[in-house]
Structure formats: C-alpha cells, structure tokens
Length: 124
Image (cartoon, rainbow, N blue to C red; front, top):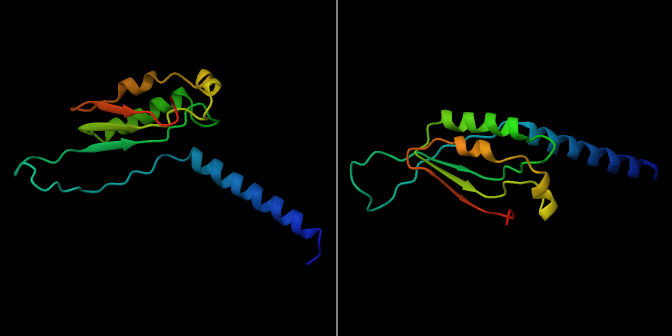
C-alpha cells in the first residue's frame, strides 16, 4: 500500500462514520418491550406500562419542534400508564445551547394515566 493511501482511508472511514451517525439520528426511536416482576407487589394487580424516554437532544440538525410533536404522538400511541423522561432534553452542554433549542411544549402533550416524571441530565 502506498503511503498516500493511508490518509485517504482515514478520511473515508471518518466520513462513513459521520454518515452512519447522521442516519441513526434521523431514524425513528427503537421501541423495546420487557417485563419487570416486582416481588411482593399486589397479587392480581394489572401490569403498569411504563415508557422510559431519554436523550432527545433537541436543537440538533434533525430534532426540531415538529419532529418532537410527531415523536410525542407516537409515544402516546403506545398508551403508557407512566412516562419517565430521563434527561438530556437539549443538544449540547452549554447555556447557549439551551437558548437555541426548540420549545419543549410538545412534551406537555404526553398522555399517561399516572402522569409523567422528568429528571435533568446535562440540561441543568
């Protein structure tokens, strides 16, 4: 292999990785389902459907207010009893990132019988 092929391969690998990361960010969220059995819980009680959602990263190239509204509508179609929002609502880690992030108002449209609970990640 010629020495000048190495930088070309590095650039090609980096560009491929960036393209893969962008495609992943544009994709719809993955829904995984599982059951958690709580020992000592009330016998005969119906199961509780919990939606756990994290890392929205609003304000990046692909997640704006309209996409957030569509994601909330999709989440509501799952009919959760409880929604847990596990932080990292905005993209970035700086105060200025919060200033340019889209409005989080669509999150108010989440519908769950037992409500919604949110904790902050790097969104302090």
